[in-house]
Amino acid sequence: MLSIKKTNEFAEYWVKSSREKRKTMESLYASRRYADCLFFGHLILEKALKALVVVKTRDHAPYIHNLSRLANLAGLEESESIRILLARVSEFNLETRYPDVRLEFYRACTKQYADQFYQPILDLHRELCRNVKQHRS
Image 1: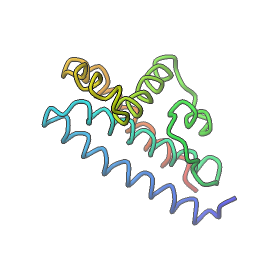
Image 2: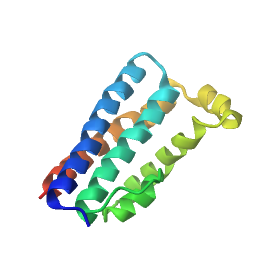
Image 3: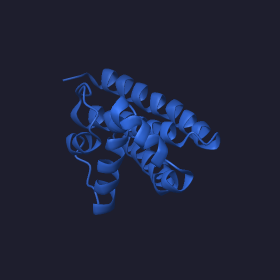
């Protein structure tokens, strides 16, 4: 179990990192690089969820990327729409990393497609960061 001081330090690291990556996500969206934008959407949610895991468990964040699993470890009460969003956004982590599916994903990732996820990701990220702040010691 981490000390309160270490818990807060690690949580702050994850939140700060997620906010930096959020700026990158927003820049990628503005420059119409939608596939990369969605990959960073996954990244900001992963980092915010890891911060929540740290503050709720007082332990290190696990070395996993599955957003639904991280939400479960954080004890996050998810609505059906959040469960669906986390499952779908988790796929962006794989679709942008592996060459055999990357090209197909890049072709499918139009502005219209990205718009389905862009604002919901930003909204959830904001809520997760607020949740971390509420649970810090």
